[in-house]
Structures are given as structure tokens and as C-alpha cells.
Image (cartoon, rainbow over all chains, first blue to last red):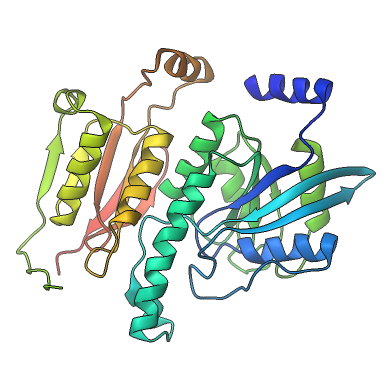
Length: 205
Length: 125
């Protein structure tokens, strides 16, 4: 109800010049791949490097003044690619990915700071894409915590079931776990249904 | 840094609603972190709000180091409807009915979780 009222008032009195759109989710759900796709399409530039190693993004990355256009509608935004939120960061996991011990420890320290920074940004974003790995269990405390905090602040949310190109992907599992939110499914890697995501953004944010 | 001493088993602490009601959230947070760093599993007879859960994650990240990799937690929330949520926000007293299980990620592993069932494994090595 509050969300509807907010949307109505925003429609009547106009919206902010640049909305801050945060990309949230646990590590390795494809947030930076998605941020790169959006940024490349509307600015011609990438936002960050991607890796199979968790916590590749350890500081908030920002791309300003993206004009997302689709279906005759336009939204102007600052895109924020957040470090993945996690309840644990174990340097030994990085060693398993072939990283030297000292580098793994340094990476681990940076990753913990990144998680704290991402949580602090929950108070400052205007709208959020919560990105899920469609092949993984969506009902985790990290996801429940992200969604609960955004909902408590009436921040518009779109659930993005990513990695639908994987054989074991089950995006319906995500929709069923959190049926109260706007939802779309994509493969950022394979550039599948990005147009559908853009429509969700201009219509619901 | 000194290596952790191996323990024979995992201590599980159950904390009643009555006991928790007496404490401010900052105190509860310190108590949880002290407990999990001792490699105990804590079962709290109350749910955390989303904001409190975010603070719990933040605190565990701030305390993460080579010996303490963070936490695993799970629980049942109160599942308030929108009216109950609004009343909770207005009165500043959200419904705390629920349960929280929290432990170091070294010893605790989630197996399955949904809105009304959880299974966990405590690693004894």
C-alpha cells in the first residue's frame, strides 16, 4: 500500500533526476556481468571485471548518468554494482581457487569490508535489482535480509533470476520463494531477455 | 596468531525469550559474537528484524579474520501481515516471535531452509 502511494506521489510530482539503482545479491550470482551488460548497452563502457572466484567485486562500483531506454520510455540512473553480501569470508576458499596465501588473506580482508559497505548502501539506494543464481537455493538468510531491509524502507525491488542458461537453472523456484516482488529471468552472460529486464525497470522503478 | 584448541564437541546454548527481553540489541549482538567465536551454537527464542540481521552480518564481517571466517545463521521469522508490520514500525516494537540459530561457519552448515523448516549440520572435526 505504501509503495503504491509513493509511486502515485512520484507520478504526480515527478521523480528524482537520477535514481540510484543498486545491484545486490550474494557473491557469484552474476551482478557485475549484468552491470557490464547494462552499462555497455547504454554507455558503451564496462563497469568491472568478472571472475569465477567469489568476491571479485570488493568495493562499490558506480556508473553515472545511464539513460536506459526501452519501449518509448526512459529512465535516468546511476548504476551501483555492489560487492556480494555474505555471512562468511574464508581465505582458504580463495586458495582453493589457486590464489597465493598472502593474496588470499588480503582479498578476504577486502571482501569483508566490501560486504559492510554494501550493507551500508542499503540506506542510500532508490531502487534495487536483487540478482539470484537460478541454479541455487534462493531461500537464504542473506537474500531474506536484503529483501527485508529494502521492503522496510519501501524501496522498489525487482528480483532477477540470472544464469538461466545453466542446465540446472530453476527460475520458478525464486519466484515461488518470494512471490510478492516483481520478477524477471535472464542470462546476463548469454544476453538473454535483457530487454524484458529493461521493461521491468522502466515500468516498476 | 595462536591456533584454536580442538574441542570434543559442540556446545549448544538455548536462550529464552525472557532472558533476551532484558538485553538491548547491542548487548545481544556482543553475546552472539562471543558465543560463536567460542565455537558454540546459539539458539535464541526470538526472531531478528531485517535491520538486526543486517547488523549481525556487518558485525560478523567486522570480526572476520584468519581464525574466524564468519557465521551461518538461520531461523523462523514472525511472518507478520502488512498491518502488523506497520503497527510494529509505528510502535517501535516489532513482533519478535520466532527463532534464531547462529554459529560459526567453521562448525555450522545449512542443509535446507524454507519458511517453516530448517535443517543444519554441526561439524565436529
